[in-house]
Image (cartoon, rainbow, N blue to C red):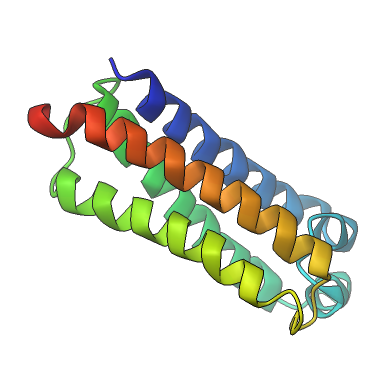
Length: 139
């Protein structure tokens, strides 16, 4: 079992769970995690939009978690595992880098959100990359 990919899967699962918390607890959670005032207000007004957007994010993060666990050998082997993990790793790394370019144009979010979320995404991408590199031959 690959420790880095187990960690990668766990990290994605934790973040998916936090996103579920935003759906359940509403505006205060959207604000705390930096989703922006508009998402928080829409949630408080009973709009379905924040729930739909956040649900799609939960779906992606959960799928990414399953792929990391699959590559680590924790669960059964999923199809297209190499391609999926390369794309997941790339997305985490690209999102991490891109966020630093949005600090001066935060689009409804705080500069601190972009810094912290970028650091988190870069960290997740690095963990995925190391695990993928270690496990590549057996995928």
